Image 1 (cartoon, chains in turn cyan, brown):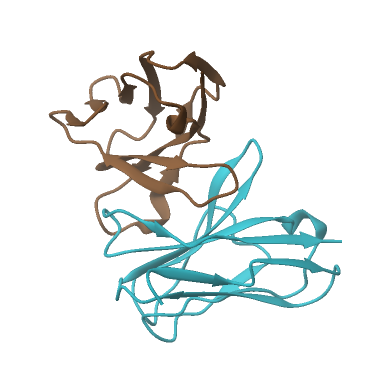
Image 2 (cartoon, one colour):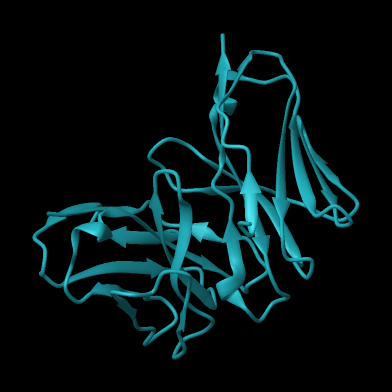
Length: 112
Length: 113
């Protein structure tokens, strides 16, 4: 692994189903983030983690949960997907909050 | 008022032209400023950080005006490969509040042959 990876690349999901988007970084960054990007709205922060073991809510956290059991992994879970969660999801990491954020390639999620 | 605002464009410019983007932010306590570039259907990538004294990287120049609360990006001698969306990023507080890293909506640039 080099940098930050996300899986799956894309997914079509039925409404009401549970889905976990995976994110892994190998840069030993302290901070990790989940964003969603929608046309006309730009990137919006869903959840973040300052360091392993801690998480916080961003701008649009409702319907999503995260965990940070270790430094490398930061999964995002949709407990019961709804069509409004159709979006492109980007995971990112940084050494700290003031540093450059490195982004994963994104996951395109469609909820029908 | 949105915390970070940008002119969405699109900016359509000929090759070789000079183009400038502005970005305004509302939080006067903002500490860190960046320009990111995002190609179509790709992830954002850092173009350059923006320092108080202004900084230059080849054809790209970034400026910060704290008094007026805006940052700018100047691209000289535009290339076809500069076509992308440029995102302004502002960290709302210093170091401890990661939830205040705000991305602007982006400005779309198309460089035309």
